[in-house]
Structure formats: structure tokens, C-alpha cells
Length: 227
Image (cartoon, rainbow, N blue to C red; front, top):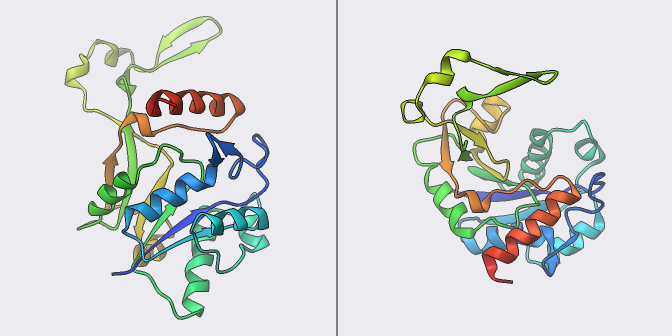
């Protein structure tokens, strides 16, 4: 069984310029994803899919492979993750390399641990894919909505249900996805029906979409690492 880590890191970030290689706590953001993948010791290949030479150079510096550059078709704003993964699988196949399982890792994951990737990979046994999730801190059944200043329960009956009587719900943390290559093409998706969830520690989860997010992530990193 051969497994590849595909770190999707195109250039052209708009909200945070050069986000994928912007320095985060002493090294490029991309480095954290590469290091976690390499240190997990579960991949036959760790590669970065990018259309940007600067990103490619940094990827190589930190030990990933960049055997080809991402095409304009799969690097445009309308391209999907599936498009990027399909291109990687196809290009490797042309060179005689095929993989049974892939792991799509997004580049801005400074809290991702190698051990997390290993444990999530173990859940692939008996499943077609694995998605990392976190539990909602409160029951989503208690959600509220607002009309003007008026606060309205989304489900008034659910407001009276005790939290211990409500089954926990989980959300996709958007950090990485394991998937069997065969299943990826059968469903054109990283999330087929036979999908296992890997519940992550909340300290590893952090959206970094804005400069405020970035600043919060730096503070969180300092606390977690006594930096």
C-alpha cells in the first residue's frame, strides 16, 4: 500500500498576501505542513502542488518534492481541490508511480502534529476516507437567529432539551483529508459515504483566513509552546 501526501499550496492569496509562505513564528507557514507529514513517517512521498516558484523553492528547502508545477487550469480561483489532486495523481501515473491512498494537506496548519496524521491514518482501516473534525462546543440544536434586534430560537422545542440528551455534533476542521485513490475517482470527492471521522484536540484547530486570525494563531502558538 503506497501513500502520498499532497500539500496544496497555490500562490496568489488575496486576504493575507503570500499566506502560504509568510513567516509564522520563525519559519514559513508551509514548513509546518511539510514537517508534520515527513515526521509522521507514513508517506512514501510528500509533495507540494503549487504554481508559484517561490513556494516551490521553500517546499524543496524543507524536504518536500515538487516534481512538476501546478497548471494554470488547476491554480485558478474556480479550480477545486479535486482538480488539483487529480492533476497530481495523473502526472505521477505518467511517470510510472501510483498510490493506493492520498492525504490532501492544506498549507496553513501550524498546529498539526505528526502523531495526529499517524492516528488519523490508522482509521483508514475499513474505510474509504478519513476527515478530521472537532466537536461543537454547544449543541447546534440551540442555535438562535436574529431579525433586527429580535432574537429567535431556530428550533424553539430544542431549547428545552438538556445538553446531555443531545448527540454531539462535529464540524470539518479543514486541515487534511485521507482518501483511497480508487474511492476519490468513484465519488469525485474526498468525502465518500464510507467516511470515518477523526476527532481532533481543539488546540490543533485554527482557521487562518484574515490578519486577525493570523495574530490570534501567533498568540496561541506562544502559549502552547512557551515561546
